Every structure is written in structure tokens, then in C-alpha cells.
Image (cartoon, rainbow, N blue to C red):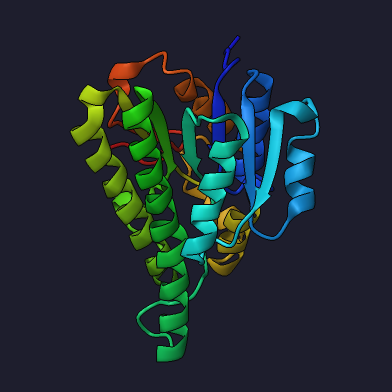
Length: 255
């Protein structure tokens, strides 16, 4: 049984999909959770419904707004005076913004992807590292994607994959340079996870059967697998795994 009792965890994108499963796993392990949401407060409340209310603080913030990102950090930190783990999970994945799209679409999609998927999580990581240097250490967990390493099969996902590659690189940079300060940083690179975003991507690529046919296990990754892995990494039980990129794709993409 994983034990996060006494730890305070900040999780972005807690209202649905992978984020909701992370919230459930973190809560079950006994942590105090700062559960961020973008627009779906009800989703964040549902994801944390089994947790005692004194162990949850739900905060809304638009991750396209740098001032809102800083406010999320300040309010989360002020709640208990310390944040032990930051999980950058929230992301946008628009099936648009490819080379053949109109300039206006390209600009809009890339601007959003860079703000939400790169600038916001890196800003939180910067705040966290500064805090960890004073607190004696802490943990960062970044949810990236296998698309960041192999490239997406759909050219319309170029902005998404590029942004996930950027935040992956930023996390590795922190891991290499702050390991001696007891700051741990991990990357999780999921494959096809059973989420609304993946279902939309599958529909755009010819249907779910087409997606599933290319998977070694013949099935999509359940979001709970990611949630359980994040909860384990949050314990700090395997410190020397810091810097690693953990592939969760059912052997469909082996590096």
C-alpha cells in the first residue's frame, strides 16, 4: 500500500481523464491534494469526492495566463506552507495546426499549445524548484507523451507532440542539474490512453479499431495505470530513477 501521508501534492488538470485517476490514486495514498482545474470544477470535485475535505483544496486557473499560473502556485503553497510534489498533467491536444492548415489556425493552435503545455508547466516547475531548494528537496512529475519521442502519426498533432517534447526536455534538465539537491524529476510518456482526447484523435484517424489494431496488447492503456505510477513516484521510494522517462504503452513502442 502506497503511503503519501503528510505530503502535499499539486496536480494540474485534475478534473478528467488521466488527471482524475491521478487524483484518486494520490487521495487513496493519504496525501493532501491541491487539485487544479481549468473550467470543470465539478469534474475536479468528483475526482476528489472520496477524500476527506480537509485533505483537498480545489483551485481553478487558466493555464494560458501566466499570472493565473503564479496564483495557482501561491494559493497551493499557502494552504499548508509546503508543496512536496508537483504533477504537471494538464494539457491541450488540438487535432489541428499542421503544416497544411491555414495560417490563422496554425498560429492559434501553436500559441495555445505552447502556453498550456510548455510555459505553464515550466513556470510551475521553476516555482517548485526554488521552493525545493529552500525546503530540502521535492519531486516533479511530468506527463509527456510517446508522440514526443516518436512523432505523431497524424500531422495535425505536430503542435501537441512538439510541446510535449519541450516539457520533457525541461524536466530532464532539472533532473540533471538538481539531483544533488534532493530534487527528483520524472517523465511519464503514455501511449494510447482511454481518455476523451485519445478517442477524438482515434476518430480523426479512421476510428478506434484502426488505433487498436496497431497496439501490441490489443488494448488502450487504462488511465488508472498512470495514476498508480504517479502515486508510486510521488513517494520518493526510488530516488535513483530520477531523470527517467517511463514508457506506458503496453509494449507498442519500445526504445
